[in-house]
Image (cartoon, helix red, strand yellow):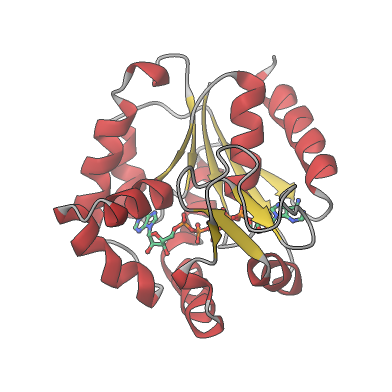
Length: 213
Ligand code: AP5
C-alpha cells in the first residue's frame, strides 16, 4: 500500500497520515519531519535545509530526493508507506517513479480560512513530532506530548508572513502535481473539512474503496 497525501500546508496531511499509517500498519514518511530532525541534529543536510524552510521555500530537489530514497529503502517500508509532503515538485514526482510505484494519491482540500485556523493553533512535539492543536486537538497535559511527555512548541514556519509564502510556494510548485497524478488516474480528491475523528473515518473509507481492501 504505497500512497501520497497531497495538499497545501496546514490541510491536515501529517495528522491524518499518522492516523491512517497506524490503521494500516505502515509508516508515515514526512520529509518535513525528517528535515526538522536533521536540523535538530545539526547535520550538513539540516544546515542546508534550515534557511529554505524558515523562509517558506522548498529545499532543493537533489537533496530531498536522495533523503527520500534512503528512507524508503528501510525495512519498515516493505509493506508500504504514506508519503506526507513528498513529492512537491514535478522533478520530485518524476524521480519518485524510478524509486517506487505509487498506488494512490489523496488530494486534501480545505478552505483558506480552515488552513489559517489549523496552522494558527498547531503545536508540535520537539522529540517525536506528534501534532496537536490548541483547540481542535489539545494535548491531555498543557504543553506536553501525550506520547512521549516532551515539550510542545510552535514551528518557526508558522509565522503569518511565512505561511503566506508557503501557500504561494504550494500554488506555484506543488499544485501542478494534481493534474500530473490525475492524468495518471491515481488521484482522488478528499474534502478535509471536519473534526479529526470524522475526517479520519472518511479518509479510511475512501482509501479502502480506492485500493479495494
Ligand atoms: P512540512 O512539514 O511537510 O509542512 P507542510 O506540507 O507545509 O504541511 P504542514 O506540516 O504545515 O501541514 P499538514 O498538512 O501536515 O497539517 P497538520 O497535520 O500539521 O514541510 C515543512 C518545510 O520543509 C517546507 O516548507 C519545505 O521547506 C521543506 N520540505 C518538506 N518536504 C519537502 C520537499 N518534498 N521538497 C522540498 N522541501 C520540502 O495539521 C495542521 C493543524 O491542524 C494541526 O494543529 C492539527 O492538529 C490540526 N488538524 C489537522 N487535521 C484536523 C482536522 N481534521 N480538524 C481539526 N484540526 C485538524
